[in-house]
Structure formats: C-alpha cells, structure tokens
Image 1 (tube, rainbow, N blue to C red):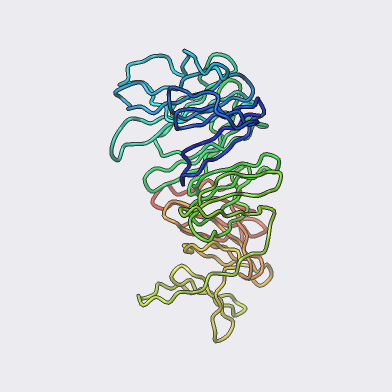
Image 2: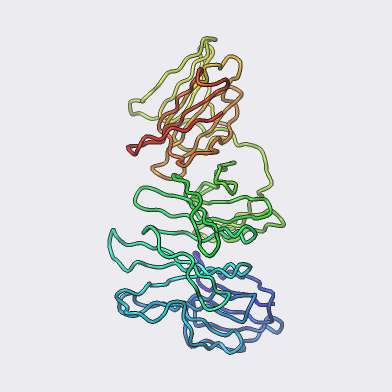
Length: 400
C-alpha cells in the first residue's frame, strides 16, 4: 500500500491518499520523502520539492517543482517511483518566455489521462490559468491543449465514462464544465454558467458535489441541479467517501464537518430581516384570491390579512424572478429564479403553493435567472420560459 501525503493543504493539515502499490508514502509540496508505512520509517528523500502525483498503475511519479514562470521553464518531471530519478518531462524543452508554466497535475489512472493546470504567466487583471490533458499510457501525448483564461478549481474525475468536471471563474462569471474523451481528443460537452465551487464526483450514483463557501449543491452528470443545502459557514471540501456517502469538509479554524449525502429533511425558510431602507416590492395575485409579494429578495404569501414567508427548500439567496402558473388554481405551481452575482443562481419550482421547493434546471445552460414567463397557450401543460439574459444575448428555454 502506498499513501500519498499532501503536506500543504488549504488549512495546514496533511491529507492522505491510499494507493494499492507498495509500502511507501510520497510526501508532496515539501522535499519529497518516502516512508515505509508498515514500519513508519523514512527510507528516502527527494532532492527537489514540489507537487507529487503518483500513478498506482505504473512505476511513475509526476513531480511539479515550484518555479518562477517566464524566467525558467516550469515543467512536470516524470520519475521512477523505485529510484526517484528520471530525465523525461511532460512538455519538451522550450524557451521560458513561451513555455507553458505547469503548476499542478491530476491523474486519472484508470484511463491514463494526466491533467496539467497551467499558469499564463501574466500579472494583474489578465492573470489566470488554462489546462492541458495528456494520454500518458506511453510517452505523453496531448489530447487537449489550452482553453479560456480563468481561475480553475480542482478536477473531478469520472473514470468509468472517461469524463472530467471542472469549475472555473472569470471576472463576475463562473462556470462548471464537463469534458469527455472522444477518440484521442478531450472535448467539452457541457457548460453550465452561474455555478461554481470545489468539486467531487461520485461515479456509482452519478452525483457531482460542489461546495462554494456556505452552499453545497448537488448536480447529476448532465449538470442538472438536484438539491442544495446551506452549510453552517464557509467550508472547503477535503474528500468524499463514496461507500459511506459522506463528504468531509473543514473551515478556516480547522473544524471538521461531515455531511451525509443520502438525504434528509428540508430546512425551514430563513427568517426575515427588517431593513430600514425603502423596500422594492412586487405584488402578484391569482383569481382565487391568493396574493404573493416579492420584497427585498424574499417571497411572502397571503390569503387574508397576514403574510407568511415562503421558502422551505430554497437556498438563502435573493429571489430575482417570480412567476405564478396560469393554472395555479389546479396545479398550485410557482417558479422562482435566484441571483448571486454570476455565481450559484438557480431555478426552483413549487407544486404546493410555495410550501416546498425543488430545483428545476434540466436543460438550462445558465443558472442566473432574471425573468420568468409562463405560457398557457403554446402547449398543454405549464410551459415556462426563464430569461437568463442579464445584459447578455436573450436566451429562452422552453420546459414541459
């Protein structure tokens, strides 16, 4: 058994990944050390520090040393796990002024695909990353090169279907993207705007978990939002236990949070907060005498002289759009769109007059919703058209 220890996690803790190869441990980001895990004795030390990516299917280690981009070539070294030596590199030798600056790698050992995160070497507002992917079943062969300059999160692997998910953010917009290996080329097959976070994928259940501060969202492999829960603060995901269906997270104070992903009860809506500022209210009514009020991003319902806050199952974010079904008296259907400045939007549907809500995003390519329009005539059933333009081209989505 080999365990890979990361000596520089987000919060100063060491993370352990167990690999079924031999009785050694590779320690990353500090000068690499090899530890016999049976006796817990140090057996060797690498001369070069850096980020290590072991390959449990071969004798390879991928070492990415820290370096100064554009003054030297920042490359990934390919080493022998037995001798800790090697002369091969991921990229061929190039002029540092034009060479890709590799800063981190992630390996899909089942498909022998290595993902390399690359710094663009530009300071200021134009700074960012791209990534490349390589087939490393033999000498490294590129299957995907470059991409949009963004800030990329971690890679979430789906080895069985030869897919990878990754989040990226640029300026005030964020995205989750899905790539698939098609022949000898890695191809983007889906992009969802208005979603972000650090990702973990659960292949047996086709679930993608994304954590963005105090929000945990669950998508399927087609990037349809299935559910969202509020976390008790801002947390960073550490690892996911697929067998036990548990997600392990930590905060900046090294507190550990364990989330069971098998289900639970919906949280009540967050309590209303009084604002001394003039409210921006919208009033909606139905023929049956139901009234709905959208006030400062919160939704209220009244049938008489008092108002009730709605929102069980809704994330604690501002409601930017609201619509009542034309057939509300029979189908009790409501829709709300959420807004979060380019990140973590969403479309939610209620079929019980607003008592409970569920995500309704299948087919959407952008989760930032600014307007919703119902149609009672285009076809039987409650078609709705969320407009997620937000000063971009005006897309309409039809849903049955």
